[in-house]
Amino acid sequence: MERRPVTENIHHIYFDRKSWNGQTLSRTIRNLEVSKVLMPIEDHNDLHHNTHAMGIPSAYVARLALDRITSRNRRYSALDVVRDSEDYLRSIGENYYDDATDIADRLLEQIPFIQVGVDSLKRRFIA
Image (cartoon, rainbow, N blue to C red; front, side, top):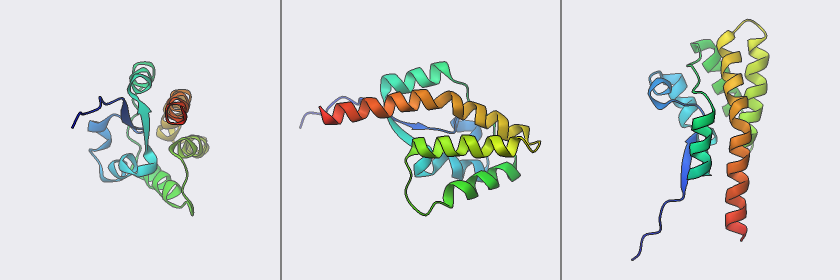
């Protein structure tokens, strides 16, 4: 049986792995299915070369973010979750939680790259 070359990667929206997996709440957020998105390898590489890894949130901000993400009554796409999380964390940051604002800024950086990756995969599967 011939193996096809790998052309997609799973992108963890909350990166980098070592720091985010170092604490229970941040590891939980990072490894949620809605915190991952399948992207073509080239788009995934572009994302990592052109965006910044984000710092780990405080326990308080992590708990708020986790509660927000898991409170959904229906399934959302990873891109919807990124957009909602960016908006929600920015609103938390306005109340003096700088770590929330920093993460919101890093999520905002990723949105165009994730959108390109998602659109690219759709075109591949439709063609």
